[in-house]
Length: 460
Image 1 (cartoon, helix red, strand yellow):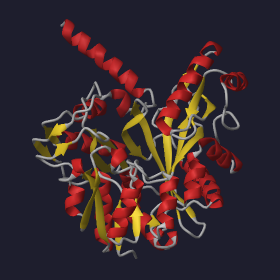
Image 2: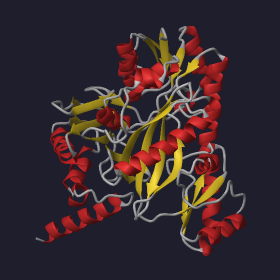
Image 3: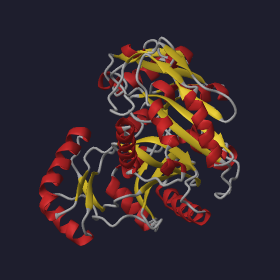
Image 4: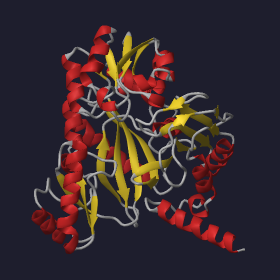
């Protein structure tokens, strides 16, 4: 076991890793920017090192500063959390050359799965279903036009090196190809320093389904079932649940076996998430892989009983999956879990809401979990992601998970800033949501229904 781990992150995920380390008896080092000097991850770590000014590029993304903090505190390993440097293959390489264990996949695997067209090829080889698309990077608008004619409109071009909706455009006709291809290429180059694009068939109303996997250093990869992540706005997830109401036991086993085979062959190690789109007929199609722990990992923890962050750390020490994860049948997921992301944003405009929290009361009770680093009188700085808490509920079935989420949201009090709590309360009352009729366009229809309702009420 490691003696000391540095957490190269901030906020609730840094605190989540600290909790796992405390349970394993491992000392921790927090790194922080000037803006996070009074953060809880700084308070609860055994040691803390300031690595720069507020902006991420000068602190949390500053690789020399992070490595220097690791060296002066004499740590054995670095946990990157999610976001920031977590999928940076160069950072993983620097950790290795500095004699530090990177708690994640090997650099070459991060690089392979980060180049999305290569990841598609690896999955296709293992007979994991993928969307029809280009064989690799598309170099020009003319080549994009040829591929679009082959695949059939509508198509979508995506940044090969990134995600989060940047470098992505839907093309519905030949007239739009040049304009949207060039726009996506410019956006990808600006966001990721890499303007490479590839193309896929565009599904109009897909569900977003992702599978949690864990691999060890001995070629063993295990699939831990799926999460439903279809409720999104601007390609960012708002609410997740597990299991999906549309994934059958047979599908879960079939996809799980193929993922285990594919990822074992490429040497995948540690936690990762494989993302799929489900089309209208219920078929799954691979889109990309995230080579890190996900924001929504708690819903998988709730339905499997497995601590994924502790598992990450144990696997990094050289433990086998069979030693850290009890055998779970893929059809043996228990109950239903749901997560609402509580963001410091206006609940409908989605504009950021930085500032001081005046009141902060979190709910509790059976089947309720809150992952957060926020607190009363704490300040939400304007420099980082708006996520301030994750509210997770667990029930014997989806109905009970929803019922617990409703009462937990009602008892979650945050004053001083705007949050998305009111929005989540409205979503949970929506009849389409309760019926499980969701896809990635759900929020567009939801807001349309909300406006119609308000117009009717105003007319009375």
